[in-house]
Image 1 (tube, rainbow, N blue to C red):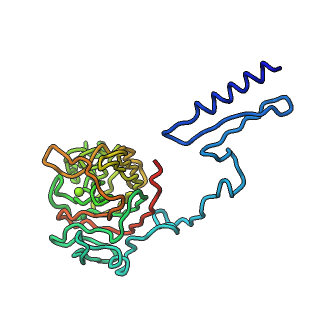
Image 2: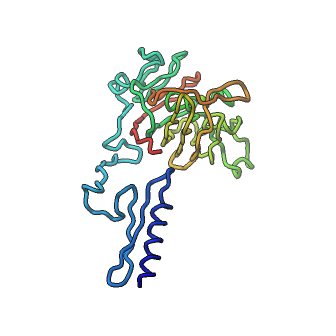
Image 3: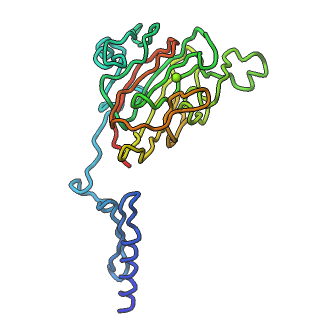
Amino acid sequence: MMKNWIAFLIVVIALCCGAVNNDGPVIKEWSKIVDEKPVYYMTIDGVMVHEKDPAKQPYPLVVRPGEKCGDAPSDAFVLFDGSEESFKNNWTDVRGKNTKWIIKDGVMQPTKHSGYIQSEKSFGSCQLHVEFRTPANIRGRGQGRGNSGVFLMGQYEVQILDSYQIDDKLNEQGKAIYDNPTYPDGLAGALYGRKKPEVNVCRKPGKWQSYDITFYRPIFKDGKIDKKAIFIVYQNGVLIQFEELIGGTGWRGPHSISNYRYHDDKLPIKFQDHGNPVCFRNVWIRPIKDNR
Ligand code: MG
């Protein structure tokens, strides 16, 4: 019997020591003999598995979802809801002055040479919902057609482009009138210059589309990149990115892209003016924990 107890203690000590992982939650395991049978216990970051006491494991806050898919939930910060008020209160040009973007029929869009628009508030890690529409009136080609972009922290771009593609079956029957060839890492949904989207799930030009972006900001240590950014992006409800961003997304010539450069923990969201009248509506954001 004594031998069994010693063996049991050795197992417990080994489990406790071996389960501490600096890269993840701290897990501890042990067991007790109850009615001559072992009962197993585990804590994750000090909280017992299936702990019911809310003082030890608080329940999540209740958040009411929006009525329709894409509507802002109750805890979101609404950046644009179609009203003049939300536009004026939340958006400026890149110098923090009045923007030349306009609202028309409840949607916002750039005007000629208006430049990027940026949120008045700054954000780091976040969940961001954006609805956008590339022009129905098709003009230009490649990167010159329906180009805009959603810039997290003002610099990490999820590309917007007219990348609608008739599927192969239809292509065999006639000319692909929406065909807009460009490099894959510059398509709509690309992390520009860094990673093409997993699939092309674009709607036709003139149709509303959505991006739902979960973004974990990069973390810098002593001025250098310590933890790279992570993007999880759904376009029109379909997963197109789950990616650790290798570096920046700034254009640096036809075959090069920017690297990480130290910046603040929170920075404004920006939408690009690339000379194409891409429209935006229903923009909301939920700051989230860095969690890494
Ligand atoms: Mg762009």
